[in-house]
Image (cartoon, rainbow, N blue to C red; front, top):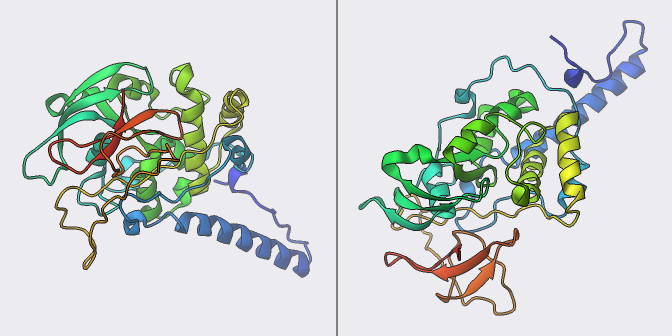
Length: 313
C-alpha cells in the first residue's frame, strides 16, 4: 500500500523521458542522503568508552525545524525483535546496555561480585519523569525500567520500518535514546510520542530536546501533532540545547577492550570548566560539576573504583 509518506514525484505514463530521469535522480539523491544519515549510526560498537556519542549539537528548536513532518506509516510488521536483541552490548564495553544505563543513571550502586563492575544489584534513582526517589533492587527490577525516549514502535512508524536490522539495533541500544525511569510511569507512556505523553513539567524541555536529537541523528520524521507539541514546549525554553551523551565507561577488567589498547587515566579536572557527563571518569575526587541539563554532579569513587561523575543529589 502506498501512503502519503512513501510518495515522491508520482509519474505519469505520458511524462517525457527527461522528466522521468529528473525524478529518478531526485529520488536517488534523497534516499542517499537518508542512508548516509543512518549509516553514521549503524555501528556504534567502534565508539571509544567515555567519549561523546555521535549526535547532533546546537539548538533543539533549530534542529526541530529540520525534521520532516509526515503522516504515520502503517505499523504492519512491527515487533520488538525487529530492533535486535534486547540490551545488546553495542559499544563493546563488556556490559549489556541495561546495566550500562543503570550504572550511569543510579547513585549508591552495588554490584554483583565477579562481573567486572557491570551487573547492578541495587542503587537509587532520582526519577526524571516524576521527581520521585526510587530504591532499585535487582530482585524487583521492574521498579526501575529503561525507557526508550523515542519509543521503538514510534520509530517504526516514522521511518524505522525502512531501515536495516543493524540500524534499528543501534537505535534501540543508543545511550542517547535510553534513560532509567520509574517503571509504572514508563509503562504508562507505552509507545506514546510528545503529543500523547509527557513527563513532569520541569523536565519537559530536556525530554523533548532528547527526542529531537534522536530523530535528527537517525533520520526519523515526526507527525504534525508530535512536531506541534514539541515546538510548543521548546517555545518556552528557546535556549534549550540538544543533549550531548557520552558512552558508558568500561566495566572493571573488561575483556572486550580493543587489543593493544589501554584505559586512559583521566587528567585533572579543568578548574575553568564545570561541565560533567554522568558516568564519565573524572579527577580529582570531590570535584563538582554540572551537566548540560543543569544537574549538579560530584566526582566520586565507590567500591575502590576510579572516580566518576555522579549525581550530587
